[in-house]
Length: 65
Image (cartoon, rainbow, N blue to C red; front, side):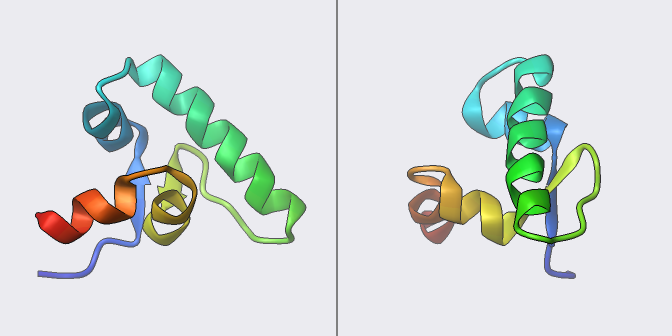
């Protein structure tokens, strides 16, 4: 199986137990932060590594799965 590089809004919604609309707003904010740092972004997706770094507990949860 290939390593996953991006989470979609649907995946973020499921992981966090929030609506898809709220997940899109979170992705939009995170992507804006990445864009300010000079990174290219993909709308509606967030790099897994960045999400794990920024979202409290995400790195720990992934390690236990």
